[in-house]
Image (cartoon, rainbow, N blue to C red; front, side, top):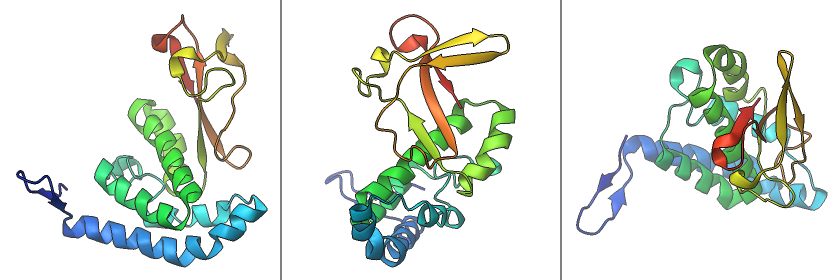
Length: 192
């Protein structure tokens, strides 16, 4: 679903499907997000109910493969969606992006059992997901994270602190990065 690109100027034109995706996201943003964004911000309200309304539009699994309930869209399609939503409320758009990052990680790296267990609820937006990387003292530098996961019997025990987690307290599923190995990025595992 590539856009037509002029090799000489680098300018491109969206194809019909991309324009439809953009228009759908713009309409939702204008109808459901923009009229409420300022009130949500003033009240420090997380609009989980309106976020869940994006599920039937296919926005709960933008990058997720279609055979597990996703929309199987590309990065340009996602940019069109996020840009349209951000025009109404950048925080709303950011959470949709974060939710999709978590769903995509489960689709790409999870087991078949995890895909079947979690993705239908995430792609429908029945469940909201948060991505938990940022820590005090290391920010979003994955290689510097301190949260540890230690195997105990058949489970892992996680010990550490996360901060600035969008949707914290409202999400139903958390994708958490923790150190299971040595220093650096190769010693990190992801837990659901």
